[in-house]
Length: 325
Ligand code: ADP
Ligand code: MG
Image 1 (tube, rainbow, N blue to C red):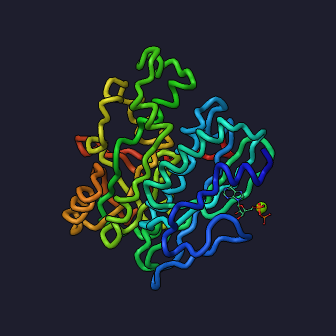
Image 2: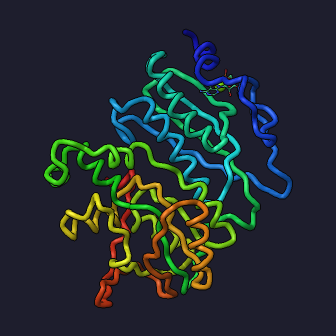
Image 3: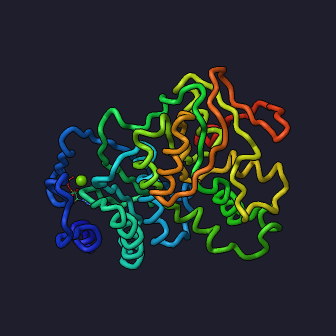
């Protein structure tokens, strides 16, 4: 199978209707996108590298899903609606079975969000994939990291920390293995391998939330990006953090580390004015996404935790950094 045959077989889908904003998809030198009048393009790329972002033996279907999910999650965090994506793929060899599984995982999630593949590049090389997603939104409505205001409530969706426990178990960390025994529950595994991008929530928060981002490198570190972009501080109420049943048996310090510093959550972290509490609840209900109010944005810089007795403590906002560990 040659390069063009590979693209035709696995990535060209001529029978699928394209949204009206996609004037031309796979097959020419460029794809052509035309956002809805009054809208602007939202663009984001994410690369997945074997050995760094995924294990060599991960199921191809799972990898396809995750590559798509982490990209769609960025659109979600901006409040954008997906239009399409490109896929740049380096493969050590053209493995028919692998490609079939990968494409299935990729397209199942892309199709669920009406996000067609509009182009890409395919080359031989160490397994590496890069997706670029294109979405649209009205420019004034984007949920920017710089938009948090003192007094805003701080929210997080879902159950941050679960992906971390799954990752540590897969890496054989003794504490995770003694916690879970020799079986990783399917629900936990899928929190790590098959995150669901919070697109419905992100779009429902447009006009409601101030700042937002998606959690990829740990809650505390990622919150640090909002704080520095907005020139504000925050405190997190430890008692208000969601307590995932999967994590309740962990010692308190380990639990905190999972929730505040675990990566790969792909949940939304956002701020909204106190007057918007009702609107946040409505957005959570409309998008069928659990949302937890976990703290407050402050005018004074710095990130603090606050316990049930009101004692505050500075929190190291160190997220994952590819060049620091
Ligand atoms: P060029 O040489 O002009 O860059 P290519 O030969 O790389 O074009 O690709 C031919 C067509 O196939 C283009 O429309 C390109 O976007 C598309 N394409 C290549 N690889 C992929 C892929 N992995 N997924 C989707 N489309 C792809
Ligand atoms: Mg090319």
